[in-house]
Every structure is written in C-alpha cells, then in structure tokens.
Image (cartoon, rainbow, N blue to C red; front, side, top):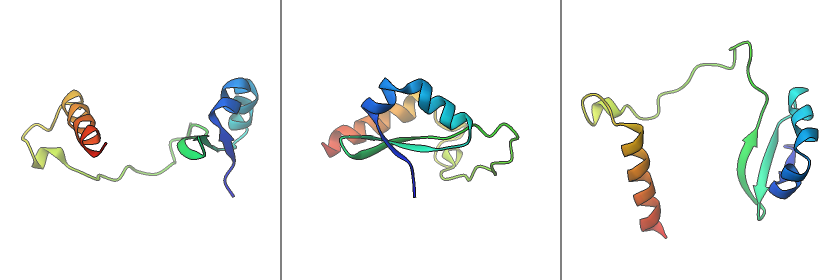
Length: 82
C-alpha cells in the first residue's frame, strides 16, 4: 500500500516527511484527492535502473527538439484540451 499525504499536510510538516524519506519511505502527494507527485528517496548508489527511451525526437527533427519548444507545444496541447 502506498503512503498518501495531502499537499497541505506535507507543507505544514515538511521536516517530518523529509526525515521519513531519508529513512527510505516514499509518499504520493495528493491535491484535492488526486495524485500530484511522488516523493521518493534519492538513489545515491545509482542502481535504480536504466532510463527507457519513450520518444526519440531526433527521428522527428534532426538534432532533436529544444526543451523550451517541447514545453511550449505541450502547453498548447493542454490548453486545447480545456
């Protein structure tokens, strides 16, 4: 079972949750009962695994796409959905 914590609770008790994360616990942070983000301990040893390539932007445009351009396009798509 995942540890759930509300955003307000996390803000008000950040030190306590930081200590728990240092000890290895992870938390899913909720805002209005919806998952917002996850807090997990850092993988200091680097043995978390390898990253999986989801999209190779160099296949779309030689040299890839600048992060700013990608964010701009994603925000535009998000606005269209609303």
